[in-house]
Amino acid sequence: DQQVKQNSPSLSVQEGRISILNCDYTNSMFDYFLWYKKYPAEGPTFLISISSIKDKNEDGRFTVFLNKSAKHLSLHIVPSQPGDSAVYFCAATDSGTYKYIFGTGTRLKVLA
Amino acid sequence: NAGVTQTPKFRVLKTGQSMTLLCAQDMNHEYMYWYRQDPGMGLRLIHYSVGEGTTAKGEVPDGYNVSRLKKQNFLLGLESAAPSQTSVYFCASSLGTLPEKQYFGPGTRLTVL
Image (cartoon, rainbow over all chains, first blue to last red; front, side):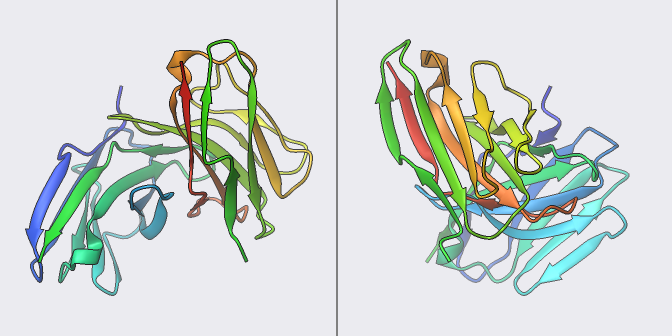
C-alpha cells in the first residue's frame, strides 16, 4: 500500500513557466512533509519542507502548498529553469518517528 | 567538509556472496539511515540508527544487517546476496531532532547476478 503517491512519473515545462509537482498521501498521522531533488548519479538533496500546522511555505522560487483535508501537497517552481531538470521526491513522516515514507518521484524536464 | 560519503560506488556480486557497504559522515549527526531505491518504488528504509551503538529495523530489513560502532560510520552488510537485492543504496544522516531533513550520500549501485 503506497502511503505517499506521486501519480505523474514525468512532467515537461517550458523555461520561465511554472512547474507544479503533485503528491498525495493516505496516512492522516503524517504531519511533516519534505521535497527532495535528485540529479542522475547523485543522492537526493533537500529542497523545502512544510509542517501540517501551515498550508504554505516559500523559499525563493520554490513554494510548497499543503491541503490537509485533501491529503495533498504540491511543489511550485516559478520561474522554471533548465537546471531544475531532475527527479523530485516528496516524503512524509509522523514527527516523532524515524520513518520517512517517500513517493516514487516525478521527473521534471525544463525545456530551454 | 565532505558531508556523507559512501564506499564503494559500484559493485557486482554473485548470488551467495557477502559484502559490506560503508557510510561515513563528518557532520557529527546523531541519526543515520540506509535506503534502497528501486524503479517505481521510491526510497525504502532498510535500517536506521539513532546514535552510536544503536540500530533498528526499517521497512525492508530482511537480508541485511547493520552496525554503528562509531558515530560517524554506519555499515550495511549483506551476508548472502540475492538478485532481489540488486538496487541503488543510499545512506543518509540527520542532526538528531525530529522531524528534520536528511543529508544523502551519492549512492552505491549494487548488482547481484
